[in-house]
Image (cartoon, rainbow, N blue to C red; front, top):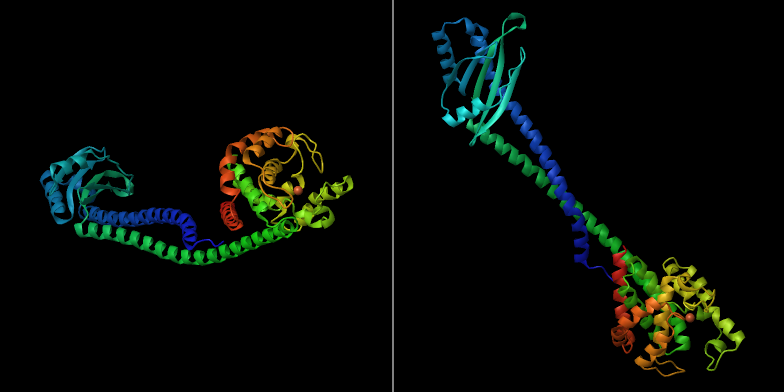
Length: 422
Ligand SMILES: [Fe+2]
């Protein structure tokens, strides 16, 4: 009952890939944010330096210059640096003068239509504008008289050098690539560690399941071989139970206990003396009382195994009858556990349709007739109705199958339900 290598890969990948994608997105956004902030700081610095040059050269004295001299100063700044446009406002934020160079009409319109923010005394305001492949920084600075009074504002549209833009983009892509590669490599390392641990754990769990299955078979066979040639009855009733439970959409988490309970339903017969267990004729009242005790004995045997504890429900109640005339407790209707009500149907059906040392098999049609008569008496009518729906197919698949085939089918069901409830 080994879990395949590919299944282990599939299980780990299903958990690691989403986590890797989420981490990549998180660190990618974080890196992009920090790199962009760093670059913005850098280009704002470039623009601030250029604005500082204007302040150093003329500053607020600009307003005292003649018109021709003002134009001369602005033209000189425009041609000296990376500015494509400069504007000067008075203290009332009224545009006094503007000059443009190396900027097309659309760019000028875009810059002119962008929001204008006039900063407080001694402050700068920056804004990045993207135009085609180029980056521009709109820098606005206040021009001050002494004592911090604002005399006007200087605004420059600064073109970030193409080489700097190229390097900045490169830097962002490099940082993002480094993050993704680092996550990928750490993911691979993490994956190989988890794979080896998971493989070890699943191998232990698989060995444990196999041991439990062996224990169940040994216990079931020990009693089956006492009153029968083979233990085929145990395999058949268990497979009938599984088919019926699946048709009734019983929860997957209930299936392991249904399987072990069905397989070991008569395990308590191990404590019944041969003189009673193997008696060919009818049992006396006292003998029958002894025979009835097999349900309690079975219950006690199973108490000793944690894995088989779930089987107790069927073992202790498989002789209860829906009308309350069964044993050991005379439980009635839905007071009988569901799995025991289900099992008692397939147990009787198989007893009727199979050969035993003391009797021949009954035909399918005759068996169904008897089963129908017992609806509401021995059996829960609703579960019986469902069983009769699946009975033709179940009978065809199971009744004449060899023990080896039945064992293979049961092993595969057990593996499936053990894996689905992991
Ligand atoms: Fe029994």
